Length: 225
Image 1 (cartoon, one colour):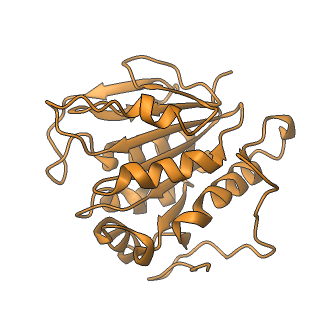
Image 2 (tube, one colour; image 1 turned 135 degrees about the vertical axis):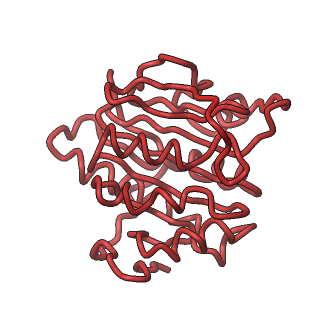
């Protein structure tokens, strides 16, 4: 089924374990695609799809040029190429210049995902060096995207989360173990018109919070413990 919503996850150093934790607990529904980006040198074979497939029942595959985003699937950005999403929901791999010294860059994925899916976009910033992803967050938020940032105190490398928080655009700042439930909650809230295709946690009932923080518009976002 063609995806009608997207979750875009970006990480750098320490990101493999963090992304595994998210994918282990969050299972995308039939209407939700997940795009995963982690910084890998262009001359290195990542093996990440196979690694991530071990922890999730969702289909995990390499992102390839022209692939349509399908719900219930996880797409992993290849080494040395920017991952983008076209207006009609297709994957595009770009050799454009590096951003923040990296390719793939979260800026390309976040901005194109938000442009394509608008308020049916959830962006997730996890552990890593630098400020990759932070420059695009204001435009993404203006397009309707919801933004989750890992609590720097739970990040192996806090630089990326701290840079994202500093933009004032984060809607939720959460410890890693709370992020999967929040992604599922937000996807389901945005897809209430189609309840049979809801996203879920891999085991146990939804851990949704009884109260939902207001979307942050100031210098800091709500932090849930």
